[in-house]
Image 1 (tube, helix red, strand yellow):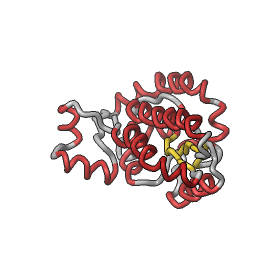
Image 2: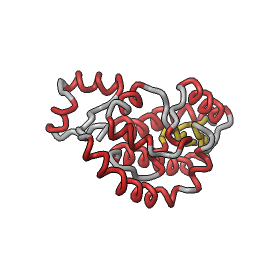
Image 3: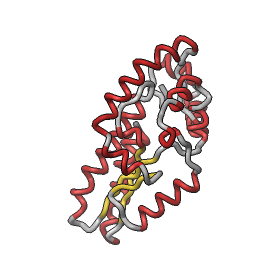
Length: 197
């Protein structure tokens, strides 16, 4: 919440004077999690949907000032957070049930190049990978498709594997857990929300 929503608003507010002076461009990073619901990902979905909504509401507010606002939709990117997701059998299996292009993990350098291309052109939407532009068309259908797939596959996956709370994932998540003096399991008992589910 602090990074994805509060951090986005604070960043925009901090840089807005400079953006106004230069007729600049503000890019809000979201992810395909903003496209729709998926099981065991509800916190990320809520936060990414909020980040997307924030950017879309900011865009008309600053357009008359000459400031452009974009939203970047990133898919699976080869970071330590995604590698940590794949250590959890149920989460890894859920990703494996996605269509082939949707389950692919993209190298960080390639994702950065797609973002750079969008920034240079001050795009309202930046897709990494670019084929996600086509996926936007199907957004109204995703909740139904995800629901059908989940009802069929989740019971089978859960019979064979437990899905414990993951806690925060990746190097940044581990740093945060250490700063709090809590493990992922302890934080779950403590009632704090974590980035995984």
